[in-house]
Length: 81
Image 1 (cartoon, rainbow, N blue to C red):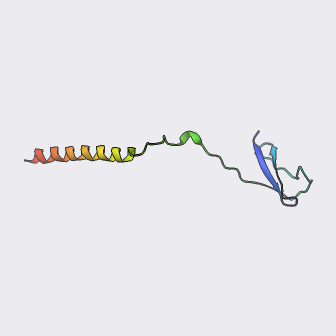
Image 2: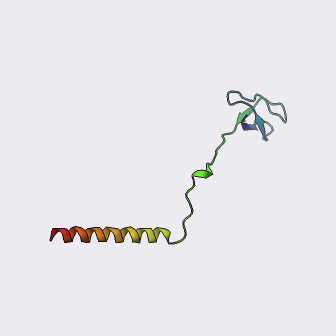
Image 3: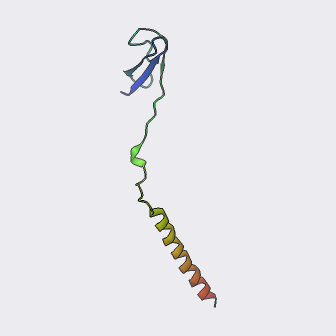
């Protein structure tokens, strides 16, 4: 079951509760107040992060692509003569 973080507006404390996603927690576990709200949870998917590039990798890649473009343009010009 997922773990949710709740904040009590009366005692201003946060607490964690495990329950299904279709349920809500009705009272504060610390002071029994019914003035609680679930805090939004954010998740970072670290598997999708790009591989870190070394300094200058982007520049070297640009230079290589520019060389290929120049060769292609030269070939196109030679073909038109």
